[in-house]
Length: 416
Length: 129
Image 1 (spheres, one colour):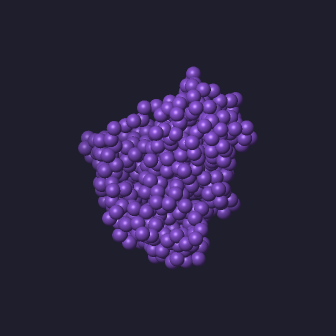
Image 2 (cartoon, chains in turn brown, cyan):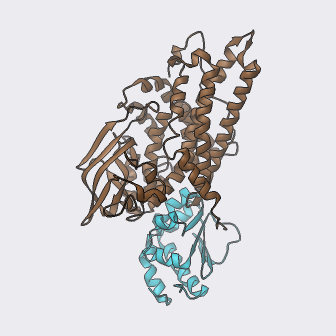
């Protein structure tokens, strides 16, 4: 971030004392958060502006390497494979810290963890032994989760929609292999990932009713890394198409059995949504931190802005929203860390709320900074652009609402 | 009709199965290292087991176990016989687990010896394949 570019003697805050919602965290998580915060100050903040302005296809490998050294690419990998063995709470705490500086950077690591999740859910020691140790090597390795397609977004997320999906990547059985044909779109990390969890429909099944999860090494013949999406925000991470031209995948790379991809994906999403809510909370916090500092330093009518009643009300509303958002995502993350199947309600509620307040807080924070909020050099407009991102991925508000209401009207038999 | 005809039959099979698992160094050392305990709750017919690195005990533990797994005996049969994949069983809610999921994810791959031996153990107690 170009703090040095600030004008009129205004300097931005780099951290916040506000951490409501995590007072009762285990000490190791607290220490972990402090370490992540130091990592963010040292490696992420100084390059936020450069990465935001770089061409869409550029990846800051120096930053990725620093994150790898920190363990961010193997947060959820079991310790026996060289990982940190963290759960959803650990991931969420880390991603909020990073997103408070740069949501795009948080997603580089988050998308890798998402691609690893089916391996963990598989409980398959062979698959795990083949794919997980690579994340603990000397060099950083990225993964991706390839589900979204040009004509099928929500149709691949909502089981009842599956029959209506069109143009889905197809998997045709051929002896002890499957052959993948088709195109994925908007896949974070696909440009550089070593492998992806790729969802494809088994040939002959209507729509996506035969959706199946495959672990696919992306150096296989026939894999093409397609055009990069030139995004409005989240510019530090690279999203692109991933095209499969008769790509042969061994049958043992199927996760959870043929035709069960939708179930695997729902589990994966329910675990991921709490962490995306954490990213949105981080975006809101980052914007708020800028506004808070500005309102302490900027004087009008002989008093700093925060002493003016209207501005005070805005600051109070913003911080209340951020605290509430953190409480919700921490509750969701703790729920996801302590039960299988992963809960659907808590993560969906947390994400619905966090995604909304990220947009609201970023816009309000921008408004209290007046003209300065509109300048790129003050970094606020980046938060506004980033705030709309999480509203789209891992479940739009419309999809989340369906998950929430389904839980509301389903009797729980969770009696043990 | 249920695969298991009585609680006693289920108790015998799963006690023996987890005793076999405890003979596996990898499984036992994982329980020891992570101080893991498992409370297995099965129904139709009802049966409960408490498993620690020290042994297998029938019934409900005096203190809550680190991991609790709940399923029907039919689901358990399908799972251990290799006819139902664990991720699918979990995703559909046929197997429900409570406790530290990161520990569960480390523990599940170590159940392999039980998959290898289940059919033989079940058959020895008169459970139809």
